[in-house]
Length: 333
Image: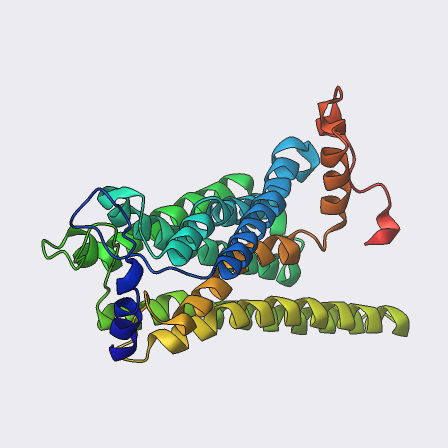
């Protein structure tokens, strides 16, 4: 706390307020111009890249009839959540961190944490449903079309978003609807969450999803390995095992690397999410997972590469383009 106070007092020679025409305005921290340029460049690139990649996924699945499958609907829901993170969360959190002021009003200050928690929870829920879908497809491929249907996928998507919204309200209820306002000046936006809710969020948003995803993908790998051994060709066995191991490693590693650092730091008592540079870095690593998801879950698919080419070349505006075959070569699987 002493370091924070001395930093603000050092600006007495040239005090800058968040709102110059308001006597109750917070004092704005002045960052070096070079640092601001670098940060704004990073925030802009992160936001644009996240929105662009997820928008490609959304347009591809929505436009091409061949991609209207239960699995791709789950990927579409994931892309929507990640797109909103890039469109809303990353820009607003970036501006707040760089300017050290909240310029979006007190009402949106209370609403923004709800949006953030809902999007993050929905994104995690989508990952879990995708894992379950892929497990059923590998474990019982003959019954997959009857067990997993489009209507069931839509129901799971609605359930996921509904549960994410309810969960966000429960966790943030005291912080949002409490009469005690922790904001000491105009231009500040502080939302405090009780430590017991932080522990609950650790279980709900990290331990439980990680356990489910790791367990399912572990079983997927074992099943794929067993099925590959049934094939007499040694070459096919080797390729199948390597592909399964590589996909599993990428999914689990990126997921854990993006989420574990945030929760490790958040468990330390007395941390300040507004002043701690370490906490801000951990949050940004977590947000960037929304940019990585389309790369992991869509970019490795041949249909995504093909559909992206047609979208970027504007061929989707041609007549009957939605009926284009995105899997012309079976041997490329």
